[in-house]
Amino acid sequence: MEKFSERDICSKYITPALTNVGWDLDTQIREEQSYTKGRISVYGKLVSRGESKRPDYTLYYKKNLPLAVIEAKDSTHAVGDGMQQALSYAKDLDIPFAYSSNGKRFLEHSRLSGEQEVEKEIELSEFPSPEELYWRFKKEKDFSKEVEEVLLQDYYEGQTVHTPRYFQRVAVNRAVETIAKGQRRVLLVMATGTGKTYTAFQIIWKLWKTKRKRRILFLVDRTALATQAIQGDFRHFGDKLTRVKEGVADPAYEVYVALYQGLYSNEERRKLFKQFSSDFFDLVVVDECHRGSAKDNAAWREILEYYSSATQIGLTATPKEDVDVSNSEYFGNPVYVYSLKKGIEDGFLAPYKVMRYVLDKDIEWRPNELITDKNGNPIEDRIYNSKDYDRNIIIKDRTELVARTISKHIRETEPMQKTIVFCVDINHAERMRQALVNANKDEVDKNHRYVVRLTGDAYEKDKELENFSNPESPYPAIVTTSDLLTTGVDVQTCKLIVLDAPINSVTKFKQIIGRGTRLREDFGKYYFTIMDFRGVTRLFADPEFDGEPIKEKDEKKIHGEEDIESIEEEVKEETPEMEEFQEENPYEEVILHPEKEEERGGHKQDR
Image 1 (tube, rainbow, N blue to C red):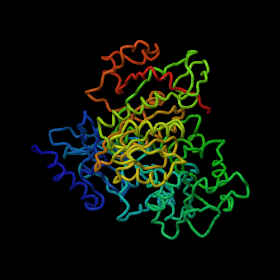
Image 2 (image 1 turned 90 degrees about the vertical axis):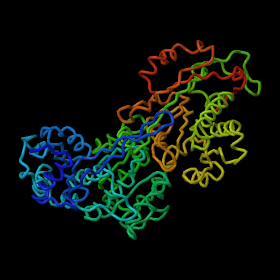
Image 3 (image 1 turned 180 degrees about the vertical axis):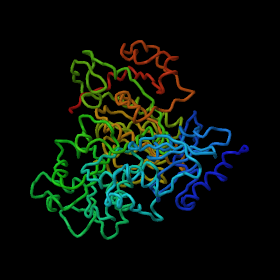
Image 4 (image 1 turned 180 degrees about the horizontal axis):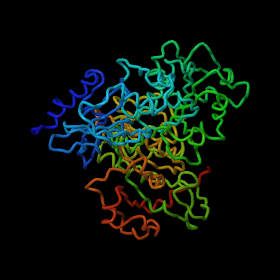
């Protein structure tokens, strides 16, 4: 064979070999189909995308059911030189067969555990037909007729519904296969911003269309999530869809969207979920199941146990368990995990920077006998640290210093960037709002809504929350909150997340970080920044799921005042020498020293 390029090999040898055994060029063969977008890299203010992943060939038995990938090499390569690349693609795409070819032969690798021969070379004319590959796949999976029917059921398609991304397809296919085989509880772990509601819709659609599940309950715990589902993909269920409203249990529908809070009450006679028979639903999908539904002591758990005869699917963005949640104990191990790390690597989610700030009083502070509160009363003589501030004791100058530090960063980067400041409680959120207003007088003079507080009791909170979530609306630009924005709010253009509250739950932490993970390149949102004033990012470091933060070449030096020696020894140990810091720590850490007047600004507050 004379020398041929990779493209020549594809057009002259591989494509004819495929079509000769029955692969349809229009419906079953996809050449160089990208399945990732390419990771976003940040260098200072420069942003670039890496290359997307795209096999030379992806072969589908039918749409959304791929069976094989082929990696082609030019004629100077050995037949197996593309195999490792093909296997990487096959693993991502959850595809059973991988092939490599140089135009002379194929090397086949079977990822099916039941086949004895893992790799073998075959002639071009021996490439398997679609039916042969599907038969081998079906045999391995031991599909019954009912399982096969569900798996082959088409996804919902329409002008307003996007084609599933590869990880959504894998999640849907694994979930429906597992359920069709009879498993009663299924867990899917997907990072915030990866389309859990869309994935749930397609799972429900396939099971509903094949009549494997006839009455479905989609449970959420935020009004925004229920509205998003009803107005979004779930609307395609048409007149079969309803939203369960307080006091009304209408059995005339087939797909129900409900709030936990609307179904449950502490009074037995007002438990709306019991107005349906316990076997009314045969599928219950629990969105954000990490937020209480899987806890043994949760009131919402009673709803799941009441509908225990139904198949139950848990959707979560939190892979690990802590005192707040035990997903795997209730739902079992996840059938699929798509992590924040993977989403960032694939270019579907925004990478992030972490900037840690350590205030010297946050380490340890003990008032002397001369220090009083604002009313002139003595302060309890004990050691205070970051867990006490804004709960047991309020240091006014600390809040002002944090506000000035946030404002300085915003002015130096982008004054109108959407920013969420997470505070200890409502009172702290209000104090922080006031401090940010004073630190941003120029912007507040332009529009008094530049900084607002979004808490449960805030004036016009729903209106301002809608404005803040709207990428087209410039105001408010900065919001202070405690718990209102931790979950269930889609602020796609949020570029800055500030942590000034002690967080003791990995579940809550990951949900907070999830507020920044969405990309909006049309609005200049390529990455987001986390400013951490409470050491939370150290406590919940999870590189296996979250990946590593952006490490820039022009990383800032650790700096502080001349009295930096006053920092406690334990913090010195955490803060390495500059050379070590640059080599090993992708975070930026800054030591802040409030003014000495800070000690006179504190007063005690009841919890």
